[in-house]
Length: 552
Image (cartoon, rainbow, N blue to C red; front, side):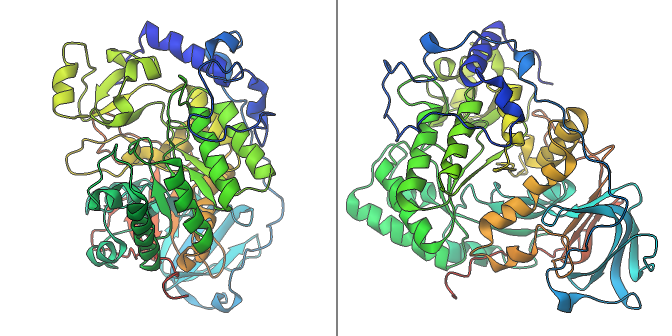
Protein backbone atom coordinates (compact mmCIF):
# COMPACT_ATOMS: atom_id res chain seq x y z
CA UNK A 1 0.00 0.00 0.00
CA UNK A 2 2.52 2.58 1.10
CA UNK A 3 5.22 2.26 -1.52
CA UNK A 4 8.81 3.38 -1.04
CA UNK A 5 9.62 6.96 -0.04
CA UNK A 6 11.42 9.07 -2.57
CA UNK A 7 15.17 9.65 -2.52
CA UNK A 8 14.62 13.29 -1.60
CA UNK A 9 12.38 12.42 1.30
CA UNK A 10 14.89 9.89 2.66
CA UNK A 11 17.65 12.50 2.60
CA UNK A 12 15.40 15.00 4.34
CA UNK A 13 14.38 12.51 7.02
CA UNK A 14 18.00 11.66 7.71
CA UNK A 15 18.66 15.34 8.19
CA UNK A 16 15.70 15.55 10.57
CA UNK A 17 17.01 12.55 12.48
CA UNK A 18 20.35 14.29 12.80
CA UNK A 19 18.69 17.42 14.12
CA UNK A 20 16.51 15.65 16.64
CA UNK A 21 18.51 12.55 17.53
CA UNK A 22 22.01 13.80 18.14
CA UNK A 23 21.91 12.14 21.54
CA UNK A 24 20.52 8.78 20.49
CA UNK A 25 21.20 7.13 23.83
CA UNK A 26 18.45 9.16 25.51
CA UNK A 27 15.93 6.87 23.85
CA UNK A 28 16.34 4.33 26.63
CA UNK A 29 15.84 6.81 29.46
CA UNK A 30 12.61 7.23 31.40
CA UNK A 31 12.69 10.92 30.62
CA UNK A 32 14.44 12.87 27.87
CA UNK A 33 16.31 15.73 29.57
CA UNK A 34 17.60 18.17 26.98
CA UNK A 35 19.90 20.30 29.10
CA UNK A 36 18.69 23.38 27.18
CA UNK A 37 16.35 26.22 28.00
CA UNK A 38 12.91 26.07 26.34
CA UNK A 39 12.03 28.61 23.69
CA UNK A 40 9.69 31.22 25.06
CA UNK A 41 7.15 31.32 22.26
CA UNK A 42 6.49 31.61 18.55
CA UNK A 43 9.08 33.61 16.71
CA UNK A 44 11.37 33.77 19.77
CA UNK A 45 14.31 32.52 17.77
CA UNK A 46 15.74 33.90 14.55
CA UNK A 47 17.09 32.26 11.43
CA UNK A 48 20.61 33.23 12.49
CA UNK A 49 20.31 31.77 16.01
CA UNK A 50 23.27 29.36 16.17
CA UNK A 51 21.66 27.32 18.97
CA UNK A 52 18.49 26.54 17.03
CA UNK A 53 18.42 22.74 16.50
CA UNK A 54 16.72 23.33 13.17
CA UNK A 55 19.82 25.01 11.76
CA UNK A 56 21.63 22.56 9.44
CA UNK A 57 24.91 24.41 10.03
CA UNK A 58 24.97 23.26 13.63
CA UNK A 59 23.47 19.80 13.18
CA UNK A 60 25.58 16.75 14.07
CA UNK A 61 26.58 14.31 11.37
CA UNK A 62 23.52 12.42 10.13
CA UNK A 63 23.26 8.92 11.62
CA UNK A 64 22.01 5.87 9.81
CA UNK A 65 18.22 5.95 10.16
CA UNK A 66 18.31 2.33 11.30
CA UNK A 67 20.22 3.31 14.44
CA UNK A 68 17.23 5.23 15.73
CA UNK A 69 15.32 2.07 16.65
CA UNK A 70 14.62 1.94 20.36
CA UNK A 71 16.23 -0.81 22.43
CA UNK A 72 13.97 -3.84 22.82
CA UNK A 73 12.08 -4.09 26.10
CA UNK A 74 11.54 -7.42 27.81
CA UNK A 75 8.71 -7.98 30.25
CA UNK A 76 9.59 -9.17 33.76
CA UNK A 77 8.79 -12.72 34.77
CA UNK A 78 5.33 -13.12 36.35
CA UNK A 79 5.25 -13.35 40.15
CA UNK A 80 4.87 -16.76 41.80
CA UNK A 81 2.12 -15.54 44.11
CA UNK A 82 -0.83 -13.37 43.15
CA UNK A 83 -0.35 -9.68 43.95
CA UNK A 84 -2.75 -7.79 46.16
CA UNK A 85 -6.20 -7.44 44.60
CA UNK A 86 -6.86 -3.80 43.63
CA UNK A 87 -9.89 -2.28 45.36
CA UNK A 88 -11.45 1.10 44.60
CA UNK A 89 -14.62 0.62 46.61
CA UNK A 90 -14.93 -2.14 49.21
CA UNK A 91 -18.72 -1.79 49.27
CA UNK A 92 -18.85 -3.13 45.70
CA UNK A 93 -17.22 -6.44 46.63
CA UNK A 94 -19.26 -9.63 46.36
CA UNK A 95 -18.33 -13.02 47.80
CA UNK A 96 -17.72 -16.32 45.99
CA UNK A 97 -21.29 -17.50 46.59
CA UNK A 98 -22.67 -14.57 44.61
CA UNK A 99 -24.03 -15.23 41.12
CA UNK A 100 -22.46 -12.57 38.91
CA UNK A 101 -24.01 -11.12 35.81
CA UNK A 102 -20.76 -11.71 33.91
CA UNK A 103 -17.55 -13.56 34.69
CA UNK A 104 -14.32 -13.30 32.72
CA UNK A 105 -12.19 -16.25 33.77
CA UNK A 106 -8.63 -17.46 33.34
CA UNK A 107 -7.11 -14.48 31.52
CA UNK A 108 -4.00 -12.44 32.24
CA UNK A 109 -5.56 -9.53 34.08
CA UNK A 110 -3.53 -6.31 33.80
CA UNK A 111 -4.53 -3.25 35.81
CA UNK A 112 -2.00 -0.51 34.98
CA UNK A 113 -3.39 1.70 37.76
CA UNK A 114 -2.30 -0.67 40.54
CA UNK A 115 0.32 -2.79 38.79
CA UNK A 116 -1.77 -5.96 39.20
CA UNK A 117 -0.67 -8.43 36.52
CA UNK A 118 -1.65 -12.06 37.08
CA UNK A 119 -3.86 -14.82 35.73
CA UNK A 120 -7.20 -14.16 37.43
CA UNK A 121 -10.97 -14.13 37.08
CA UNK A 122 -13.25 -11.10 37.21
CA UNK A 123 -16.86 -10.98 38.37
CA UNK A 124 -19.17 -8.20 37.21
CA UNK A 125 -22.41 -7.17 38.89
CA UNK A 126 -24.46 -4.66 36.96
CA UNK A 127 -21.98 -2.15 35.56
CA UNK A 128 -19.33 -2.68 38.25
CA UNK A 129 -16.38 -4.99 38.81
CA UNK A 130 -17.37 -6.74 42.04
CA UNK A 131 -14.82 -9.56 42.38
CA UNK A 132 -11.29 -10.47 41.31
CA UNK A 133 -9.98 -13.89 42.26
CA UNK A 134 -6.51 -15.29 41.64
CA UNK A 135 -4.32 -18.14 42.73
CA UNK A 136 -4.74 -21.90 43.06
CA UNK A 137 -7.16 -21.61 45.98
CA UNK A 138 -9.54 -19.22 44.24
CA UNK A 139 -13.16 -20.36 44.20
CA UNK A 140 -14.62 -20.55 40.67
CA UNK A 141 -17.03 -17.72 39.89
CA UNK A 142 -20.65 -18.46 38.99
CA UNK A 143 -22.28 -16.13 36.51
CA UNK A 144 -25.17 -15.75 34.10
CA UNK A 145 -22.66 -15.29 31.27
CA UNK A 146 -19.06 -16.49 31.31
CA UNK A 147 -16.16 -15.53 29.03
CA UNK A 148 -13.26 -17.99 28.88
CA UNK A 149 -10.24 -15.71 28.61
CA UNK A 150 -7.58 -18.44 28.81
CA UNK A 151 -4.52 -17.28 26.86
CA UNK A 152 -5.95 -13.77 26.49
CA UNK A 153 -5.21 -10.43 28.16
CA UNK A 154 -7.93 -8.74 30.18
CA UNK A 155 -7.46 -4.98 30.39
CA UNK A 156 -9.44 -1.87 31.25
CA UNK A 157 -11.24 -0.64 28.16
CA UNK A 158 -9.12 1.68 26.06
CA UNK A 159 -9.76 5.42 26.33
CA UNK A 160 -9.19 7.29 23.07
CA UNK A 161 -8.28 10.73 24.30
CA UNK A 162 -7.88 12.39 20.93
CA UNK A 163 -10.91 11.56 18.85
CA UNK A 164 -13.89 13.45 17.46
CA UNK A 165 -17.68 13.36 17.71
CA UNK A 166 -19.41 9.99 17.45
CA UNK A 167 -21.26 9.78 14.15
CA UNK A 168 -23.22 6.54 14.39
CA UNK A 169 -20.61 4.72 12.32
CA UNK A 170 -17.01 5.26 13.35
CA UNK A 171 -17.56 4.35 17.00
CA UNK A 172 -18.31 0.74 15.99
CA UNK A 173 -14.82 0.53 14.51
CA UNK A 174 -13.45 2.08 17.71
CA UNK A 175 -15.20 -0.69 19.63
CA UNK A 176 -13.51 -3.28 17.41
CA UNK A 177 -10.19 -1.62 18.27
CA UNK A 178 -10.83 -2.15 22.00
CA UNK A 179 -11.99 1.40 22.73
CA UNK A 180 -14.70 1.91 25.35
CA UNK A 181 -14.53 5.73 25.63
CA UNK A 182 -14.30 8.10 22.66
CA UNK A 183 -13.14 11.50 23.90
CA UNK A 184 -12.92 14.35 21.40
CA UNK A 185 -10.18 16.32 23.09
CA UNK A 186 -9.16 17.56 19.64
CA UNK A 187 -12.25 19.73 19.90
CA UNK A 188 -15.94 19.09 19.31
CA UNK A 189 -17.80 21.07 16.65
CA UNK A 190 -20.63 22.57 18.63
CA UNK A 191 -21.50 24.24 21.90
CA UNK A 192 -21.65 21.84 24.85
CA UNK A 193 -25.37 22.10 25.62
CA UNK A 194 -26.39 21.38 22.04
CA UNK A 195 -23.69 18.76 21.60
CA UNK A 196 -24.82 16.63 24.52
CA UNK A 197 -28.46 17.07 23.49
CA UNK A 198 -27.51 15.64 20.08
CA UNK A 199 -25.60 12.77 21.72
CA UNK A 200 -27.78 11.43 24.53
CA UNK A 201 -26.91 8.47 26.73
CA UNK A 202 -27.67 5.21 24.92
CA UNK A 203 -26.91 6.58 21.45
CA UNK A 204 -23.49 4.94 21.10
CA UNK A 205 -21.88 1.59 21.91
CA UNK A 206 -19.06 3.40 23.74
CA UNK A 207 -18.81 6.40 26.06
CA UNK A 208 -18.26 9.88 24.65
CA UNK A 209 -17.35 13.46 25.55
CA UNK A 210 -14.62 15.95 24.80
CA UNK A 211 -13.38 19.51 24.67
CA UNK A 212 -14.49 23.00 23.74
CA UNK A 213 -13.12 23.81 20.30
CA UNK A 214 -11.62 27.26 19.90
CA UNK A 215 -11.57 26.98 16.10
CA UNK A 216 -15.32 26.32 16.02
CA UNK A 217 -16.17 29.16 18.39
CA UNK A 218 -13.96 31.57 16.43
CA UNK A 219 -16.10 30.85 13.37
CA UNK A 220 -19.26 31.76 15.24
CA UNK A 221 -17.78 35.26 15.58
CA UNK A 222 -17.11 35.48 11.85
CA UNK A 223 -13.35 34.95 12.17
CA UNK A 224 -11.55 33.02 9.46
CA UNK A 225 -8.38 31.05 10.12
CA UNK A 226 -6.08 34.05 9.62
CA UNK A 227 -8.15 36.64 11.49
CA UNK A 228 -7.00 37.88 14.87
CA UNK A 229 -9.76 38.40 17.41
CA UNK A 230 -10.15 41.91 18.78
CA UNK A 231 -9.83 42.14 22.58
CA UNK A 232 -13.58 42.38 23.11
CA UNK A 233 -14.19 39.40 20.86
CA UNK A 234 -11.54 37.37 22.65
CA UNK A 235 -13.15 38.14 26.00
CA UNK A 236 -16.47 36.89 24.62
CA UNK A 237 -14.77 33.74 23.29
CA UNK A 238 -13.29 33.03 26.72
CA UNK A 239 -16.73 33.38 28.30
CA UNK A 240 -18.08 30.93 25.73
CA UNK A 241 -15.32 28.53 26.70
CA UNK A 242 -16.26 28.91 30.36
CA UNK A 243 -19.90 28.20 29.52
CA UNK A 244 -18.98 25.09 27.55
CA UNK A 245 -16.99 23.74 30.50
CA UNK A 246 -19.92 24.40 32.83
CA UNK A 247 -22.20 22.59 30.37
CA UNK A 248 -20.17 19.41 30.30
CA UNK A 249 -17.03 19.66 28.17
CA UNK A 250 -13.99 18.34 30.05
CA UNK A 251 -11.20 20.47 28.57
CA UNK A 252 -10.19 23.22 26.18
CA UNK A 253 -8.78 22.69 22.71
CA UNK A 254 -6.83 25.09 20.48
CA UNK A 255 -5.10 24.55 17.14
CA UNK A 256 -2.97 27.58 16.23
CA UNK A 257 -1.37 25.79 13.28
CA UNK A 258 -4.78 25.60 11.59
CA UNK A 259 -5.90 29.02 12.89
CA UNK A 260 -2.77 31.15 12.46
CA UNK A 261 -4.74 34.20 13.58
CA UNK A 262 -4.67 32.78 17.11
CA UNK A 263 -2.11 34.82 19.03
CA UNK A 264 0.12 33.84 21.92
CA UNK A 265 -2.06 36.07 24.09
CA UNK A 266 -5.15 34.14 23.01
CA UNK A 267 -3.48 30.90 24.03
CA UNK A 268 -2.46 32.33 27.40
CA UNK A 269 -6.02 33.54 28.05
CA UNK A 270 -7.29 30.01 27.52
CA UNK A 271 -4.52 28.63 29.72
CA UNK A 272 -5.60 30.98 32.52
CA UNK A 273 -9.15 29.64 32.26
CA UNK A 274 -7.89 26.04 32.17
CA UNK A 275 -5.89 26.63 35.35
CA UNK A 276 -8.82 28.33 37.07
CA UNK A 277 -11.24 25.46 36.36
CA UNK A 278 -8.64 22.66 36.64
CA UNK A 279 -9.05 21.22 33.16
CA UNK A 280 -6.35 20.51 30.58
CA UNK A 281 -5.59 22.84 27.71
CA UNK A 282 -5.09 20.48 24.76
CA UNK A 283 -3.18 22.07 21.91
CA UNK A 284 -2.40 21.18 18.33
CA UNK A 285 0.83 23.18 18.41
CA UNK A 286 1.62 26.16 16.24
CA UNK A 287 4.36 24.70 14.03
CA UNK A 288 5.14 21.29 12.54
CA UNK A 289 8.42 21.80 10.67
CA UNK A 290 12.01 22.67 11.49
CA UNK A 291 12.65 25.63 9.20
CA UNK A 292 13.10 28.89 11.09
CA UNK A 293 11.38 31.10 11.87
CA UNK A 294 8.57 29.04 13.32
CA UNK A 295 9.84 25.59 14.27
CA UNK A 296 8.61 22.57 16.17
CA UNK A 297 10.78 23.46 19.15
CA UNK A 298 9.49 27.02 19.22
CA UNK A 299 5.95 25.57 19.25
CA UNK A 300 6.87 23.37 22.21
CA UNK A 301 8.46 26.39 23.87
CA UNK A 302 5.22 28.35 23.57
CA UNK A 303 3.32 25.56 25.32
CA UNK A 304 5.91 25.18 28.07
CA UNK A 305 5.73 28.91 28.67
CA UNK A 306 1.94 28.80 28.86
CA UNK A 307 2.15 26.11 31.54
CA UNK A 308 4.80 28.12 33.39
CA UNK A 309 2.98 31.45 33.33
CA UNK A 310 -0.49 30.18 34.22
CA UNK A 311 -0.12 26.91 36.11
CA UNK A 312 -2.40 25.18 33.60
CA UNK A 313 -2.00 21.56 32.61
CA UNK A 314 -0.97 21.71 28.95
CA UNK A 315 -1.38 18.61 26.79
CA UNK A 316 0.56 18.45 23.50
CA UNK A 317 -1.55 16.73 20.89
CA UNK A 318 -0.03 14.14 18.48
CA UNK A 319 3.55 15.22 19.16
CA UNK A 320 4.84 12.89 16.44
CA UNK A 321 3.25 15.03 13.73
CA UNK A 322 3.24 18.46 15.38
CA UNK A 323 5.84 19.78 17.79
CA UNK A 324 8.34 16.93 17.65
CA UNK A 325 8.73 15.72 14.08
CA UNK A 326 12.42 15.28 13.29
CA UNK A 327 13.50 16.79 16.63
CA UNK A 328 11.75 14.33 18.88
CA UNK A 329 14.45 13.81 21.48
CA UNK A 330 14.77 17.58 21.93
CA UNK A 331 11.02 18.14 22.08
CA UNK A 332 10.49 15.39 24.65
CA UNK A 333 13.48 16.67 26.58
CA UNK A 334 11.98 20.13 26.88
CA UNK A 335 8.68 18.77 28.13
CA UNK A 336 10.50 16.49 30.56
CA UNK A 337 12.54 19.42 31.86
CA UNK A 338 9.31 21.37 32.33
CA UNK A 339 7.81 18.51 34.32
CA UNK A 340 10.94 18.31 36.46
CA UNK A 341 10.54 22.05 37.01
CA UNK A 342 7.12 21.34 38.49
CA UNK A 343 4.99 22.23 35.49
CA UNK A 344 2.00 20.09 34.52
CA UNK A 345 2.35 18.72 30.99
CA UNK A 346 1.57 15.59 29.01
CA UNK A 347 1.46 14.61 25.33
CA UNK A 348 0.00 11.95 23.08
CA UNK A 349 1.07 10.08 19.97
CA UNK A 350 -0.56 8.02 17.24
CA UNK A 351 1.45 5.03 15.96
CA UNK A 352 1.87 5.95 12.29
CA UNK A 353 4.68 7.54 10.32
CA UNK A 354 2.33 9.62 8.18
CA UNK A 355 -0.23 12.27 9.01
CA UNK A 356 -3.26 13.35 7.00
CA UNK A 357 -5.30 16.48 6.53
CA UNK A 358 -6.99 18.46 3.78
CA UNK A 359 -4.79 19.88 1.03
CA UNK A 360 -6.17 23.41 1.36
CA UNK A 361 -5.38 23.62 5.07
CA UNK A 362 -2.67 25.93 6.40
CA UNK A 363 -0.55 22.90 7.22
CA UNK A 364 -0.01 22.15 3.54
CA UNK A 365 1.26 25.63 2.71
CA UNK A 366 4.85 25.36 1.41
CA UNK A 367 4.69 21.65 2.21
CA UNK A 368 7.65 20.59 0.08
CA UNK A 369 10.02 23.02 1.73
CA UNK A 370 8.64 22.53 5.25
CA UNK A 371 8.64 18.74 5.31
CA UNK A 372 11.28 17.86 2.75
CA UNK A 373 8.93 15.58 0.84
CA UNK A 374 7.71 15.43 -2.74
CA UNK A 375 4.53 14.53 -4.61
CA UNK A 376 5.24 10.81 -4.33
CA UNK A 377 5.10 11.08 -0.54
CA UNK A 378 1.43 12.14 -0.69
CA UNK A 379 -1.43 9.65 -0.91
CA UNK A 380 -5.09 10.62 -1.19
CA UNK A 381 -7.07 8.95 1.57
CA UNK A 382 -9.51 6.29 0.41
CA UNK A 383 -7.43 5.57 -2.68
CA UNK A 384 -4.19 3.86 -3.65
CA UNK A 385 -3.19 7.01 -5.51
CA UNK A 386 0.21 8.55 -4.83
CA UNK A 387 0.16 12.07 -6.22
CA UNK A 388 2.31 13.39 -9.02
CA UNK A 389 3.00 16.92 -10.15
CA UNK A 390 0.34 16.39 -12.80
CA UNK A 391 -2.39 15.05 -10.45
CA UNK A 392 -1.76 17.37 -7.50
CA UNK A 393 -3.82 20.28 -8.83
CA UNK A 394 -6.97 18.16 -9.19
CA UNK A 395 -6.58 16.77 -5.67
CA UNK A 396 -6.02 20.28 -4.36
CA UNK A 397 -9.09 21.61 -6.16
CA UNK A 398 -11.23 18.98 -4.46
CA UNK A 399 -9.48 19.61 -1.13
CA UNK A 400 -8.84 15.90 -0.68
CA UNK A 401 -7.84 14.48 2.67
CA UNK A 402 -4.26 13.47 1.90
CA UNK A 403 -1.69 11.50 3.86
CA UNK A 404 1.87 12.80 4.00
CA UNK A 405 4.75 10.41 4.68
CA UNK A 406 6.75 12.97 6.60
CA UNK A 407 7.82 11.17 9.78
CA UNK A 408 10.50 8.67 10.72
CA UNK A 409 10.27 5.59 12.99
CA UNK A 410 11.98 7.62 15.70
CA UNK A 411 9.12 10.12 15.69
CA UNK A 412 6.82 7.36 16.91
CA UNK A 413 9.12 5.16 18.99
CA UNK A 414 10.63 7.86 21.18
CA UNK A 415 7.32 9.31 22.41
CA UNK A 416 5.98 5.82 23.06
CA UNK A 417 8.94 5.35 25.42
CA UNK A 418 8.35 8.61 27.32
CA UNK A 419 6.39 8.13 30.52
CA UNK A 420 4.29 11.29 30.10
CA UNK A 421 3.05 10.38 26.61
CA UNK A 422 -0.20 8.51 26.05
CA UNK A 423 -1.92 7.13 22.92
CA UNK A 424 -4.62 9.01 21.00
CA UNK A 425 -5.96 8.36 17.51
CA UNK A 426 -6.76 11.88 16.23
CA UNK A 427 -9.51 10.43 14.02
CA UNK A 428 -12.88 8.72 13.77
CA UNK A 429 -14.08 6.94 10.64
CA UNK A 430 -16.96 8.46 8.70
CA UNK A 431 -19.09 6.82 6.06
CA UNK A 432 -17.11 8.31 3.19
CA UNK A 433 -14.05 6.30 4.32
CA UNK A 434 -11.98 9.36 3.46
CA UNK A 435 -9.99 8.88 6.65
CA UNK A 436 -6.58 8.08 8.08
CA UNK A 437 -6.28 4.40 9.16
CA UNK A 438 -5.58 5.60 12.71
CA UNK A 439 -9.36 6.09 12.87
CA UNK A 440 -9.85 2.33 13.13
CA UNK A 441 -6.54 0.67 14.00
CA UNK A 442 -4.66 2.97 16.38
CA UNK A 443 -4.70 0.90 19.57
CA UNK A 444 -4.25 -2.52 18.02
CA UNK A 445 -1.33 -1.15 16.03
CA UNK A 446 0.43 -0.14 19.24
CA UNK A 447 -0.12 -3.60 20.73
CA UNK A 448 0.74 -5.54 17.60
CA UNK A 449 3.53 -3.56 15.99
CA UNK A 450 5.18 -1.66 18.82
CA UNK A 451 4.73 -4.14 21.68
CA UNK A 452 4.81 -7.59 20.09
CA UNK A 453 6.79 -7.09 16.89
CA UNK A 454 9.19 -4.21 17.54
CA UNK A 455 9.35 -4.54 21.35
CA UNK A 456 9.58 -0.78 21.74
CA UNK A 457 7.60 -0.90 25.00
CA UNK A 458 6.21 -3.71 27.12
CA UNK A 459 2.56 -4.61 27.34
CA UNK A 460 1.71 -3.08 30.76
CA UNK A 461 3.35 0.19 29.70
CA UNK A 462 1.36 0.30 26.48
CA UNK A 463 -1.89 -0.41 28.32
CA UNK A 464 -1.14 2.34 30.82
CA UNK A 465 -0.93 4.82 27.93
CA UNK A 466 -4.37 3.70 26.73
CA UNK A 467 -6.21 3.45 30.04
CA UNK A 468 -5.16 4.98 33.34
CA UNK A 469 -3.09 7.85 31.93
CA UNK A 470 -5.91 9.42 29.89
CA UNK A 471 -8.32 8.77 32.77
CA UNK A 472 -6.08 10.61 35.21
CA UNK A 473 -5.60 13.52 32.82
CA UNK A 474 -9.33 14.27 32.85
CA UNK A 475 -10.74 12.82 36.06
CA UNK A 476 -10.17 15.90 38.21
CA UNK A 477 -13.30 17.48 36.74
CA UNK A 478 -14.93 14.39 35.24
CA UNK A 479 -16.04 12.13 38.13
CA UNK A 480 -17.06 9.26 35.81
CA UNK A 481 -13.44 8.81 34.76
CA UNK A 482 -12.35 8.13 38.35
CA UNK A 483 -13.71 4.60 37.94
CA UNK A 484 -12.59 4.08 34.34
CA UNK A 485 -9.20 3.12 32.97
CA UNK A 486 -8.86 0.72 35.90
CA UNK A 487 -9.56 -2.92 36.76
CA UNK A 488 -10.21 -3.08 40.49
CA UNK A 489 -13.15 -3.96 42.65
CA UNK A 490 -15.51 -0.99 42.40
CA UNK A 491 -14.28 0.09 38.97
CA UNK A 492 -16.68 0.51 36.08
CA UNK A 493 -16.88 -2.68 34.05
CA UNK A 494 -15.47 -1.27 30.81
CA UNK A 495 -13.18 -4.12 29.79
CA UNK A 496 -11.22 -5.16 26.70
CA UNK A 497 -10.11 -8.78 26.18
CA UNK A 498 -7.58 -9.43 23.42
CA UNK A 499 -5.16 -12.02 22.10
CA UNK A 500 -1.63 -10.63 22.51
CA UNK A 501 -0.33 -13.07 19.86
CA UNK A 502 -2.66 -11.89 17.09
CA UNK A 503 -3.81 -8.36 17.92
CA UNK A 504 -3.03 -6.11 14.96
CA UNK A 505 -4.39 -3.28 12.87
CA UNK A 506 -5.67 -4.10 9.40
CA UNK A 507 -6.73 -0.69 8.15
CA UNK A 508 -4.87 1.11 5.37
CA UNK A 509 -4.93 4.52 3.74
CA UNK A 510 -6.68 2.95 0.77
CA UNK A 511 -9.23 1.12 2.94
CA UNK A 512 -9.44 2.36 6.53
CA UNK A 513 -12.81 0.66 7.13
CA UNK A 514 -11.30 -2.57 8.43
CA UNK A 515 -11.76 -3.84 11.96
CA UNK A 516 -8.69 -4.72 13.99
CA UNK A 517 -7.67 -8.32 14.51
CA UNK A 518 -7.30 -9.99 17.89
CA UNK A 519 -9.77 -7.93 19.91
CA UNK A 520 -11.98 -10.76 21.17
CA UNK A 521 -14.39 -9.24 23.65
CA UNK A 522 -15.30 -5.69 24.71
CA UNK A 523 -17.53 -5.01 27.69
CA UNK A 524 -19.14 -1.58 28.20
CA UNK A 525 -21.07 -0.78 31.38
CA UNK A 526 -20.91 -4.46 32.32
CA UNK A 527 -22.56 -5.69 29.12
CA UNK A 528 -20.88 -7.44 26.21
CA UNK A 529 -20.73 -5.06 23.24
CA UNK A 530 -18.31 -7.09 21.10
CA UNK A 531 -17.71 -10.84 21.01
CA UNK A 532 -15.83 -13.13 18.59
CA UNK A 533 -19.11 -13.27 16.66
CA UNK A 534 -19.04 -9.50 16.11
CA UNK A 535 -20.58 -6.37 17.58
CA UNK A 536 -23.92 -6.58 19.32
CA UNK A 537 -25.90 -3.86 17.60
CA UNK A 538 -28.37 -3.60 20.47
CA UNK A 539 -25.58 -2.84 22.97
CA UNK A 540 -25.85 0.95 23.02
CA UNK A 541 -24.46 1.38 26.52
CA UNK A 542 -22.32 4.46 25.98
CA UNK A 543 -22.86 7.44 28.25
CA UNK A 544 -21.82 11.06 28.04
CA UNK A 545 -18.75 11.76 30.18
CA UNK A 546 -19.23 15.30 31.46
CA UNK A 547 -17.45 17.73 33.71
CA UNK A 548 -18.83 18.56 37.15
CA UNK A 549 -17.95 22.24 36.80
CA UNK A 550 -21.55 23.34 36.35
CA UNK A 551 -22.74 21.35 39.35
CA UNK A 552 -19.84 21.74 41.77
